[in-house]
Length: 92
Image (cartoon, rainbow, N blue to C red; front, side, top):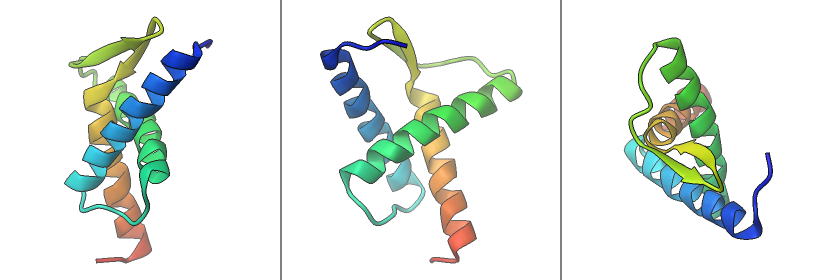
């Protein structure tokens, strides 16, 4: 997978926004922009995997340098990931 510098920056920005929205839905976590970026990418992987297993359609996908990024499933996956981290860490 090859990205241009601009495509990579846009991908990181979209992942950060998706991660921040997912964190806000699930009650947030400590951390800043880097945590949002990581949560956004993990959310994209987790959300896409769950959607594929449940045979759900890709509802909102954007193309970044001709590569698809599942925005809706990234947000849902990020929220699930943050909720799971809260559950396993025992934090309120």
